[in-house]
Amino acid sequence: MNTRTRFAPSPTGYIHVGNVRTALYTYLVARKHQGNFILRIEDTDQARFVDGAEELILKTLNWLGLDWDEGPNLDSTEEVGNFGPYHQTDRREIYLKWAKKMIDEGLAYADPYTPEQVQAFRDQAKAEKRAFLYRDHRPENPPEWQLGMPLRFKVPEIKRYSWQDAVMGELSAGPEALDDFILIKADGLPTYNFAHIIDDFEMKITHVIRGSEYIASTPKYLSLYEALKIEPPILAHVPHIMAPTGNKKLGKRDGAKSVTEYQKEGILPEAMLNFLAQLGWNDGTEQEIFSKAELIEKFSLDRVQKSGARFDEQRLIWLNGQWIRSLDLDDLYNRCEAFWGEESNNAKESYKKQVLALAQDRLKTLQDLPKLTNYFFTEPEIDEELINDNKQLRKLAEEERQNLLRVARQELAKITDWTPESIQNCLNGLLETTCQKPGILFSLVRIVTTWAQFSPQLNDTLALIGQEKTLQRIDNYLQK
Ligand code: GLU
Image (cartoon, rainbow, N blue to C red; front, side):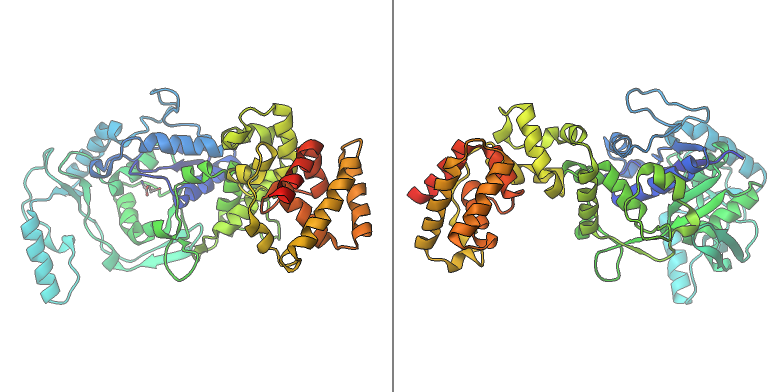
């Protein structure tokens, strides 16, 4: 059977890492089996609808390279695929057709109760110390259902369900997990509970991969599948993403940013995919860096862990640094376009590329670029703190520092071919003549020529800054 998976987000706001991890796993299963990856927009909750949220979903998937075979289109209003429409609000007729069939078969009833009446049932159940269940209050003579009334599923058989989850293994729940639930709301739109089952069936979905918050409702869904004589798809519930510390789910406050925010901060899509894939999955080896192609090859649901996966942003940043290092210079350069500081606006492309080549190893996110490279484009301001913060340099008297710099300036000025090699030779010579350690001499020269916390190798840095500016910066400090 052709594998068909779907990512079915609701356009209710920002798209966080948990959503995207689900999308990734769903995508990987489809691609691994040369199947189809379908994007379906579950927009039936009008109250939670957020304008622009769908576009954000499409753009995020696009940025990550999670290309979908069927669903809405990023550049036009036309959808692609033979199983559409792919917006649930455009599928009303389909749900109504199924709803009517269920009414005819005695599987659904018009819910006649007002909210007050339901509250009274709840209070009564509470007073009698038993769980409130709709199925205990099925009306004897329900009114004939018409649009505008809620339509409720009548669970045909109250029993225990056991089922196999592709991630969680054998699961089961007793009859207490079963209750009559709403199929069509008073606004004429279906509930998620109803719509997704119909859609997955009509779209020939083979694997339903989603967050584990849906496990508790699964017995209800199984009951509905059974009532409709539909063979359930493979069910896979992926583990929660846990906050960096403690025993709670990752929330906005723990840095659960929207994926677009990471994009703006200069995280590469490759690093994001790599990171998300490993939030709850490993291939059983020590390998840490996975390309999308490798993930497609190696991913399998049976190696997704059952327990919550710890969110560790530092790991994302580390992976990002690894991915930045692996890019060839031109590729990296193209991706940096939006991240350069203003100072570099007038610099030539060839010079910027040289700067980037030096910074590449130190970049953790593209956003770090201005901080790491400003002094190549503009005159840095003297910041004595940097000297005072340096354990070795702060031990030297100002006088000693000045003397060292004077000697260094003198020797650097003698260089006739300003290349990294001759600069290195000169610096090595200075170590001998001054009897200083690199930790002192090189740090001092580095600081007064860059006034930055970090910089690439000193000889490379000075080579790119240029001889004139290097000497000028040393003078600036000596004369201050
Ligand atoms: N619209 C649901 C959500 O965003 C989809 C769940 C599912 O994949 O079935 O949580």
